[in-house]
Length: 330
Image 1 (cartoon, rainbow, N blue to C red):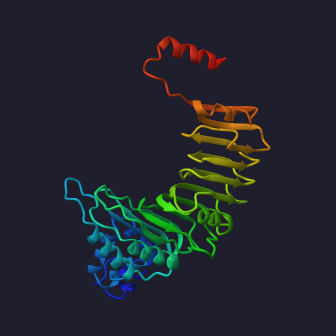
Image 2: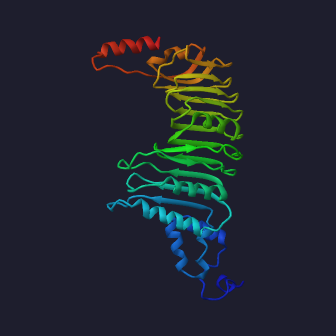
């Protein structure tokens, strides 16, 4: 059999270089960073553009052990350079990760540029982790999320001073998992996105600040899991296949979910005059509440697993705690 080096076009190439691009991509994906993968272009002409077709781009700005804090502007420029050089038509995983040690300003228009890149190339998972540094100026900046038709998962951890605006039209046809955390949003836009623009969405995790419109109305035939922490306002949920819901800080809530199995009611007290569960199944697998929400047990006949969070004052004696535990057991 003819040796690989000969088949690759001459003895100057090593055996690894003679491998097909798909296998070289597997090798490059095991390197610690995209920058390390890009440096392989120095090996030979064969490696010059291999990294630009990798199916995954994971760009991280983190503080080296014992080293100085990285500068955000340097990282932003490196991200732009990588995206400008990338030439594959499809990307299955795109991640940008900045830790809290990354110093400097992060303009919204730079994030918008990265999201536009994802809208054209991504057919898979998007992860943006962009926490705000404690010294950063807290000024509102608007960021528009483009339609990502082929994205299957979107996870955005942004910054409270970023107002995330959602597209008025278009469809996230492949999206099954959406997580938006630590940004500011419009309640009606959030409701429209989930209800009419995400036909396959199964998991929704929202931890945001609502502005302008505080009411959220969601109607979904695909949603099975919903975590909601968005401050005061009215929450309406009409979901025939929802199995798990977690709600925190909703001033009013009306939830229609006939297949509900797990309920977590966080922080604010459950008030039947403001909060209502319309369910057909009166059996729950798990209910997680605190002592201010005991009335939430009434709509359900049986609960397999009850998680009850109690706030016990320091002056509460051990004997009283044992007595309370005995009453709960019986």
